Image (cartoon, rainbow, N blue to C red; front, side, top):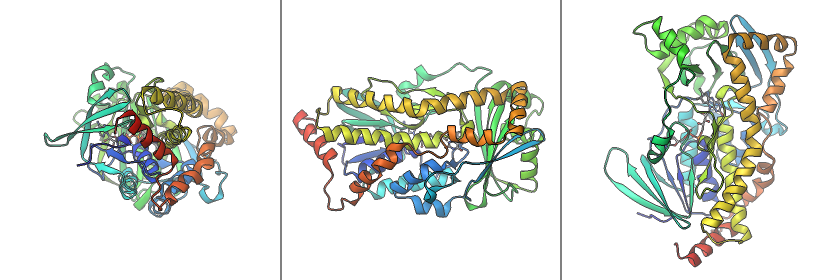
Amino acid sequence: MKTDFDAIVVGAGPAGSSAAILLAQAGWSVALIEKQAFPRRKVCGECVAASNLPLLHALGIGPEFIARAGPELRQTAVMRGARTILADLPLAPDSRYAWGRALGREVLDTMLLERAHAVGAEVFQPWAVQKIDDASGLHRCTARKSGSNERVILEAPVVILAHGSWEPLPADREEQRLARSDSDLLAFKANFSGASLTPGLLPVLLFHGGYGGMVLAGDGLTTLACCVRADRLDALRRSAPGKPAGEVIEAMLKRECRGVEDALLGAMRQGTWMASGPLAPGIRLKSEETVFRIGNAAGEAHPIIGEGMSMALQSAWLLCEKLMQAGQTNAASVSTTWQRAVCNDYAAQWRKKFVPRMRLASTFAYVAMRPATSAALLIPLTRWPSLITLGAIWAGKVNCPASIASTDDRFHGAIDADTCDPGPAVRTLKADDDSAGHA
Ligand SMILES: Cc1cc2nc3c(=O)[nH]c(=O)nc-3n(C[C@H](O)[C@H](O)[C@H](O)COP(=O)(O)OP(=O)(O)OC[C@H]3O[C@@H](n4cnc5c(N)ncnc54)[C@H](O)[C@@H]3O)c2cc1C
């Protein structure tokens, strides 16, 4: 078994698999480690904003994604109680990728992982990374095969953490364990067949103690996902003793949101309600690190704006671009200094691109969960529904970070290198590796 790589990626969600694809396409040797067997369902609203479609295309899964996903998302709505305020979703500037779409995570994540494997990433699945040791520029990852005691130690100068937010590495768990609090946000998701939600409509649901969303995803299934405060959930469960949490949530959503009741009339739930959390929105990215963080492992926005996968895909792109640039400059050998320099550069860009939408999401979530503020919000939105469209633009729904468009050709250049030339970034990395005596 090969154990030394240019890069090790921990976690094969949208962030990890896309980083693995980008680096492998550019000729890097990549290990992608995923602890769960795929396909697996995941708590998520499953909407992919239009801003990501050029990226999915560049990753090589664009046509397959379009073929499997639900209808183009052209309209949004704010639903609260008996009220529904409709608004247009903004049109993305590139007419080829004008609208977002939704697709089940069991399909999307599998597509990305298979693509990573197809372009040469070595996939370890189901294997879980247990710990990472750092020795002057070279990282040693200890991974364990799920359900067995088999262990392996992999080495690479570049380690990318893409393990999501609720699943910190075992070594970090003690420090991340939070005391249970009333304000904890717990997340839920279920899929329904036969729902009558208007195709292409993406409603946001506001209710006491939480928020949610609905959408028609691939295979005719409607996804209903929401976040609920722990104290609200406790109160709901006390009033329906013995009922599973998901069913209590479903009953509450139908009771408190006319749009959900109407959409689910005659619908059949497929599979169980899934739950996860508590969510921990916030920034986990640190400067001066020698490992790199992408996706939720770097930072998490309140899912009320449905931008987590955008941040996952786009942060992977941003980081890979930085790694390639750093390699191309040939300014440093692969050392702790090199890693910290790339990390600082990446962290600065990450904050610039994602902090504004995280702030917007926090404000919207705060307003949405409180009855008085969410009722007040409906007044201007009823009068000027275009404010909802504007909010979607601010949330990042249509604008692809400029660097994606501008570097598209460079990554494609790397893909086109079927001539087997791994590209200057990798040549530099390997040369530095050798000189540092790591490889
Ligand atoms: C209720 C809700 C609704 C949402 N709706 C939307 C939406 O509509 N649109 C949107 O864009 N985003 C949405 N999100 C956010 C989105 O789901 C996340 O932001 C996204 O999944 C983050 O991707 P990721 O790749 O960073 O992490 P993940 O998707 O969490 O993937 C991490 C992977 O790492 C693996 N892993 C973890 N630990 C290890 C380990 N030690 N070793 C190996 N592998 C490991 C896990 O098994 C997992 O497969 C929603 C979230 C919630 C809670």
